[in-house]
Structures are given as structure tokens and as C-alpha cells.
Amino acid sequence: MSPRAFITGIEGRGLSPAERSFLRAAEPWGFILFKRNVNEPDQVRDLVAELRETLGRDAPVLIDQEGGRVQRLGPPHWPAYPAGAAYGALFGADPDAGLEAARLGARLIADDLTTLGIDVDCLPLADVPAAGADPVIGPRAYGDSAAQVSAIAQAVAAGLMEGGVLPVLKHLPGHGRANADSHERLPVVKVDRATLEASDFQAFRPLARLPLGMTAHVVYAAIDPVEPATTSARVIADVIRGSIAFDGALMSDDLSMNALAGSIAERARAALAAGCDLALHCNGNLQEMEQVAGATPPLAGEPARRAQAALDARTKPAPLDVSAARAAFSAMMARVSRINPLTA
Image 1: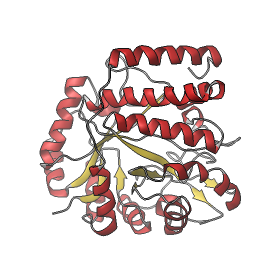
Image 2: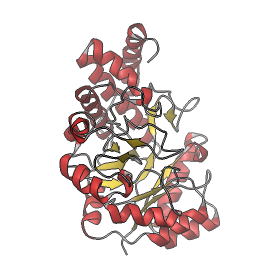
Image 3: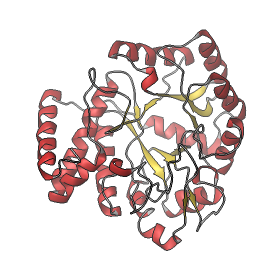
Image 4: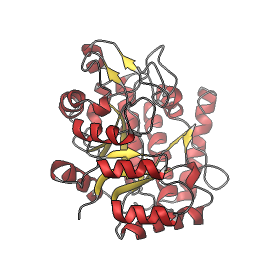
């Protein structure tokens, strides 16, 4: 039987008997880990192995490891990485150095992840922040122009893939103008489509061949005045698959975020009906997980093709002298601190 079209979180640092039974019956496509699931390296490694053993296959395991305030793995067991704005600051002074720092930082993150068995990182962002927007993106962004954001995002994606980790492009088709944090409420972007095409959407186009992408829980009033991208067939078909031409497997952002309306099951059905290939549910609440599974069919057709193509893009890491790479990266970040101490 094909796996179901959803990705699930779990509650703690190991599987409960109830979770194990649920996972075997529900067959999610993959898993996502959060800080609540993390203690130290051996524990995470064992958890990842347990998740895959429970399903009896090499299911993808995702994590949000961006740097800055969004990193689920951190000191004392893992390095702290800078927010995306650090790469943007270096790019502003020296574009080649900025791109190399972004690639190398992502390559080192990939090394951290692959030693644990984690093979998907919810990165890079191609969101272009706008003046007056909610700070939920803020220093996570690589710059304030589509060209710079796209260039750095491509370098980050390349670094991850060199390290054997699949990137997830987010937040399609752009979260940078959002007037609210979608974890808390639904943002509405009211600028005209021409502006969106030239800036927000443009940043994603050079990244359209990446294997995985994630939607934004954002309403783009010029395209669909009611539904956020995650549940808008118009935005997904016309913009994400059309104007941007993204062809990878498309997952929703977290269904448990407050931007979305309706029950968890209704949210899952709406996201899949709109054109998402995979429904993402993160909070580890078993009752909600059961509702998502009940609303989610096995992968089939184009969603199955795209999801399999993403898995087929997994590769073994290229060789890396980790000590030398970390020393070089530290020198790059020291340069950033001299250019703009606020971003280092």
C-alpha cells in the first residue's frame, strides 16, 4: 500500500505504544522533528531509526534547521548557525563571499543532520520582506530584493544537497509581505498582482526545480481574496504551478497553525483538494494526527510521482573536511560581524 499523503510530528523523545500503533496503521509519508523531540545526538539518532523501523521503510525525516531563531538543534550538542540576514549582509559587501558562506553554512548543517539520519531540511526561504510587514520573517530573509534572495537561496539549497539533505523551498509563493504571523492569525496581502509577480513570485522562479516546497498560509487578495495559498486551488494552479512553475512535491505549512480555519481534518482535506501533494501536521497531538490520517488518502497519481521524485533525489553526502569547513565558516561569520554586528 502506498503511504498516505501526510507528514506527521510526534509528541516526545521516543514513540509511545499508541503512537507506534497509529503510525503502522496510518502509514504517513514522513516525519518532522521539533525541539520537544530532541535531547542529545544518540537519542535523536535512535528516535530517527525507531520512526523508520516502525514503518518498515526509509521514510523521510524533516526538521526546521535554518539558523538564528529557527533551529531545532543547538548548543551544547550542535553548533549555532546565523540567521539568513547574515549571508545577506556579507553578500552586500562581497556577493561571491556571501554565496559561498550560504553554501558552506548549509553544507555544515547537512553534516549535522546526516549524522543523525535526518535527510530533509525545511530550508531555504525565498521570502522577500517588505517594509511594514510582520517580523515573523525578518532576519530569516536573505535580503530585500528578489535577485539577492533567490541567489542566496540557491546557494543554501546547493549546500544542503551536497551534504545529502533535501531542501524544502518555503514559503510559496511568498511570506515577506504578510501583515501577521500565520502561527497566530491569517495574514492578508493586498498589493496588486504585477507587484507580486515582479518581486515576491520572482524570487521563487529560479528555484522551481527543487524537489520539495512548502506553502504559505497567506491570502493574496489580488488572486484569491478568500483562501490562503495552502487551501487556494487558484493560487496553487495559477501561481505556484503556473507563474512560478514549481514542479516539486508541495506540502502545506503546518495545519495546526491558527491562520487556518475549520477542524484539523477539514484543513487537511482543503489543502489536498487545493493541490497540495502532502499535508503537514506538526504538533504531535495524537488525536489530531488521527484526524489528519483519516482525511488523507494514499498517495497516487501526480502527487505520488512528485513525492517519489523527491525521494529519488536523495544522495550520499559529498566528502567534506568538517574541521576545515567549520574554521572557514567561522572566519566568514567574523567578517559579517565587522560589516554588520546585528546580523552575525
